[in-house]
Length: 75
Image (cartoon, rainbow, N blue to C red; front, side, top):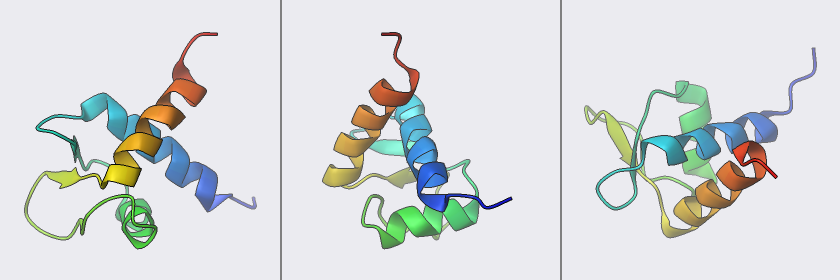
């Protein structure tokens, strides 16, 4: 199966919106490869470390909310 990693990343970022706390932090229970790609795209701060959450960048926070509404809101 040919997987579109950008779509996986978008869904993961949208799901991070569900766990937002402390001004833009989200629980990082997403696959490491996905969080690394989100970091490389500038949507989250460096995910490496002992913290159980990751800080979304301003762009990541804005996109997270938009993707959440697009993918999961009833129309």
